[in-house]
Length: 350
Image (cartoon, rainbow, N blue to C red; front, side, top):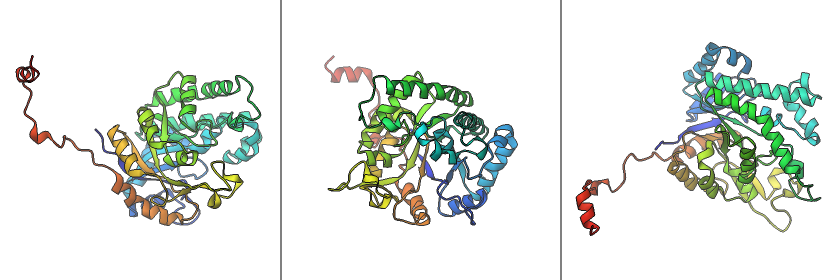
């Protein structure tokens, strides 16, 4: 059995224009000073890593890893959350998602999708060049506007959406397979893959591809009122990445799961810093240890109230204290009496 690796931290919410958050070295040193051992690196507009250059040059990829190593951290996974969403975009969201793409492909859905697919293909090669085994992304969405079944959905609409989603992602999954890397979809409202049922639909559409896996984030399940512990029991064999993020759900007579279009701080379901929400992380870490989860525990800071730097500072010890160092022997081994087949048969009256 394996002990979960960590603590790690996702850099997307911290990259910025002022030191130490404006360079990868600065971010790495800051994370290390807080006690983090790994960083999950976004590959979108942050500019922390040149995907094209790292795909073509193993030396550049290793130089990038060396900058982190000098600061005392390693790469846990790369992330293409922003690019992954652009693999499948419903026209209703075209204008909003254009901001995630470079200017030269904005306003052109086909060119934008081709750019996004190429970004994923590059990320597979870069992950291989960095010696990584997992990659974090989003699925994008074609069916999300029809999530609530009113007006009644026409027969076959959802099936066609997932068939198309499978067609778009299959070559990308094959590229990650060739690179020896698991593609971990964060199950997230707003994406077509947002719970276990939708993930199963997707698996059917890609012939249960071995690289189609899950980035497990319990906060999104709290907001959906899904049993996040039973989810691990059901899907643990596909969980290959883990965002440690807290949330709370406190419905009242005014709003519930759908949130009433309220700002985050007023919604019944909202993200919180670690330890401030309702997620039972003790049970989660125990289940992941039980099922031999092979990856990292990575803080993703999103909170409607607390300052991000405070959340990051509290996150490292929180994760470290929840990681279970897996035992190499059973607690009652001291009482073992050895294997004696004849004796066992006698004890059974055989």
